[in-house]
Length: 33
Image (cartoon, rainbow, N blue to C red; front, side):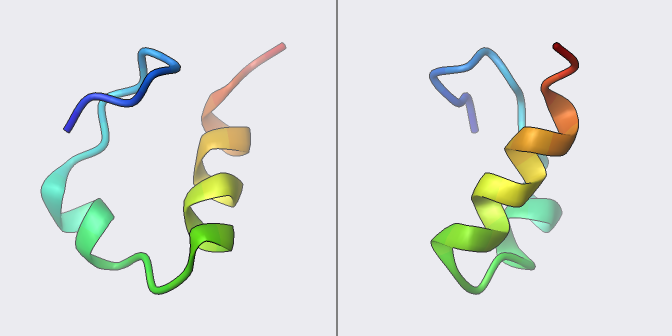
């Protein structure tokens, strides 16, 4: 699954998300600014 941020999220990781907040938290952790 390809995110618009260019981050590839493994399917098993995606399946563990229950809320949009979980996804946002994951994206923030993977976006090193």
